Amino acid sequence: MNDWTDRMAPSIDEIDAMARQVFDTLPAEFAPHAQGVVLKVEELADDDVLDELQIDDPLELTGLYDGIPLTEKTPSSPQHFPDTVWLFRRAILDEWVERGNVTLGELVGHVVVHELAHHFGWSDEDVARIDRWWE
Image (tube, rainbow, N blue to C red; front, side):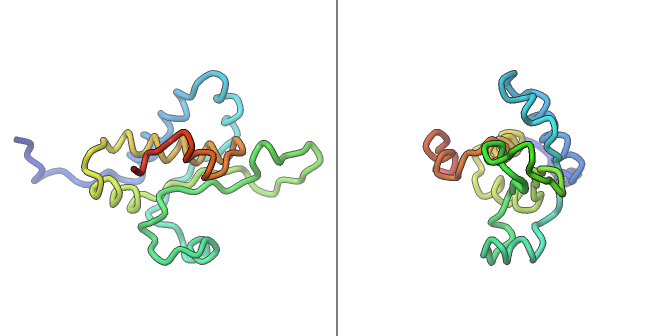
């Protein structure tokens, strides 16, 4: 039996390392298009983000794409900030514990790929048609 008495929850840096590994192993057809995307990991989404998305419980938001999807960009479009994939550590850990049937690495990978799909121009409905992860 595993002894968990001296283990701690993964830190922001450890979640960040898992997510960067996903970026590093993207298929060749996607990798060049994700190079400019910034990855940020925070404990939880801030109140402004939650209010904008009309989310009451910060543990419901595991990740977020903040940027202009590639399908909407034009050469003349000004970009005042880099496209960013946000991961929210505590929400990811909460979902991981609640599921109990996936590794933390699998869940982080799923959240990263889901948010990158938005960067590539996919809607939540598009993603849902091919990825039934939450079922």
